[in-house]
Image (cartoon, rainbow, N blue to C red; front, side, top):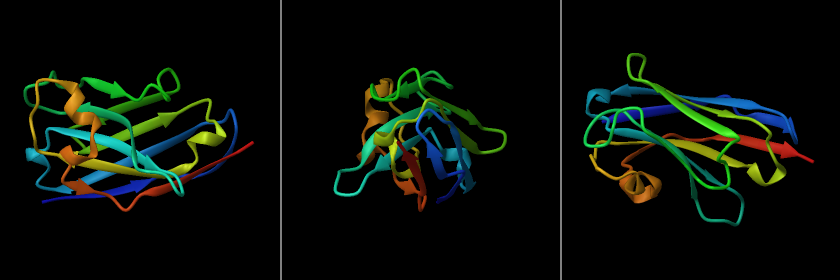
Length: 132
């Protein structure tokens, strides 16, 4: 089982930056990919970004939601079992609870890593609030 702990959330003005980190512990050697999702009040959880660690997809492959492309950068360090999300040019609509997730499932296509059903381990989340 993999345990995940996020950090780095906070309050920032529009146009600012934040860096989220997620530390994984436990059976991390089985992790195939890690992702970031967010959920705003009254809305469904949505995919933000993912990075593959091993498996059928190219290790280090990254995937982004259209809404964050060009502003967010996801990266993973398998030696430290961490994944980070650098968020630049933040907008008020980025305000949400951000959670990292891990999956042991191997897929050749990145599309599968963009749905929450793929992931079996979840962190508690860290709040990101962007003021206008």
